[in-house]
Length: 99
Image (tube, rainbow, N blue to C red):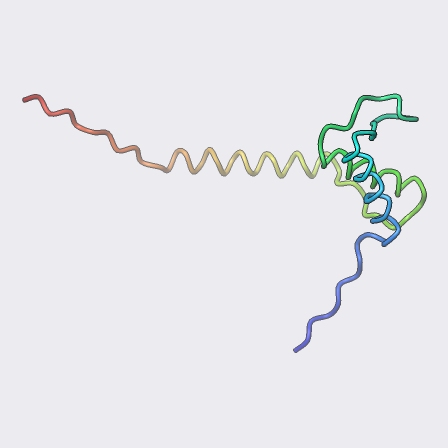
């Protein structure tokens, strides 16, 4: 059976905004903050986020930001899993031979 085609999450025009911001980032002219008063963009993720926020302001199709509560729950679950794994691991100690 054929799968249903998924809807595009981002509009093509939103992608072009991100693309434009990435070009600025690669040139070294991308700045964060209102009107470019902020500091220089240092990471790719930051450049993508700026491009998406500009697309949102223009009213283009971009998914909503994840709420802080949900992300906090996810990180809490991850840390709980890690600590549980650490507790279940058995550490093998070497016996020193006294000869």
